[in-house]
Image (cartoon, helix red, strand yellow):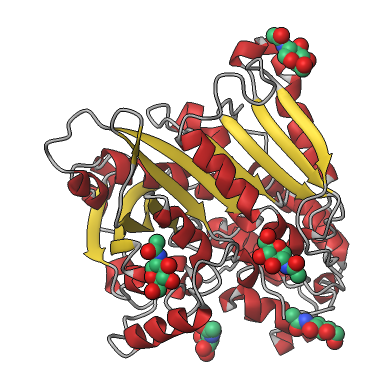
Length: 452
Ligand SMILES: *[C@@H]1O[C@H](CO)[C@@H](O)[C@H](O)[C@H]1NC(C)=O
Ligand SMILES: *[C@@H]1O[C@H](CO)[C@@H](O)[C@H](O)[C@H]1NC(C)=O
Ligand SMILES: *[C@@H]1O[C@H](CO)[C@@H](O)[C@H](O)[C@H]1NC(C)=O
Ligand SMILES: *[C@@H]1O[C@H](CO)[C@@H](O)[C@H](O)[C@H]1NC(C)=O
Ligand SMILES: *[C@@H]1O[C@H](CO)[C@@H](O)[C@H](O)[C@H]1NC(C)=O
């Protein structure tokens, strides 16, 4: 069975045997509560929350699962859960959590520049118990190779629970804020374990920050990139690697009924309802009597993405509503939310180097949406002048579908980030003369599988 999580695996640094042995080792060690039941995951008192600027560290603990040991003690010396202040989609103060891995052999590039990878896992679920800080303990093997590969380069790695404490799956502004404030927490706060690890003697350090995300993870990374200039001008982002962009989310909803990924519809609708409760009321009011009785739609509210794919496999989730797809796709409430929160390119103009990758045959998230986004960003260059414009390499892969692309371009994304951190992109990237966008069709990778 495919799952987006399972397909995150890229270069395999570890034999899975070694990995499962160490995971077993840590399972017996402790069994922390899931976030929905763990008091550690609650907001501090309102006064403290409101008075702390975004990115402030509010709580910190050694990661109770010792995920660093499962990834490899030779690569990572410690992992921490960090709870920090952020803003929700309505700019109301809230919090989010990131898991920070400390590299054993921290490297710096250039003159005391340390490297941080902000890595977004597509956990795609409206339940907070699917947050990576908790779920990685049971499902680490699928993502550990990217985390391990980054640690092996000597990078700090921050794995953000980017949907926030309400599990606002696919709500772009929530996710973008969570990513940017996690970068602040790790790189700016004196209580950050990364800064402590660098040591007090190093006052002049700077950070290279890379964002990376595929599919659901690209929503978080891309929204962070476009929100950076207005929401976090103090955060300097060195490079962004995003693949499988599911934009606009509305088009994904039109594509996946009766496919293996039909579950994305109920999961995303609950993700939005978590952030905007009036949507939950609307959805419940539109259910057919049968769907109300069976709970076939409401069940999705606490499913992981894997559970959702299995349960809704090849079904039509629109059929649970009185007027079918019209109740969703023609709802003014849903369309206004999806326009602002589920469509990339509405909040700003990213100018940091970006590597964007997408399978031409992506059926889950048709490529037209990514094509249009890149055209929009690159089109600004003629307005703002190319020296201040977008710098994007956009590769459209002729091989494989949405799920295959994650593996097919995994190594390229990592290599791009490494080049950016090491100052090897050069001022000329991507054209050689320092400007504009390069859009090209490529044939990369050996996973040819279509989505369905
Ligand atoms: C880390 O340890 C694992 C398992 O012992 C080994 O396979 C891997 O090559 C080591 N990696 C490094 C960078 O030392
Ligand atoms: C979902 O919620 C129901 C009802 O609260 C509970 O019985 C079930 O265990 C939950 N499932 C998951 C995966 O959390
Ligand atoms: C969906 O159903 C098809 C056909 O029965 C099956 O081959 C596939 O494994 C199922 N996928 C999931 C995620 O359950
Ligand atoms: C940079 O190179 C590209 C591709 O050759 C070209 O389209 C663009 O006009 C050049 N820009 C400048 C400022 O020379
Ligand atoms: C596919 O490519 C990956 C990564 O380059 C490689 O590890 C793997 O062996 C290849 N698989 C096949 C069947 O060629």
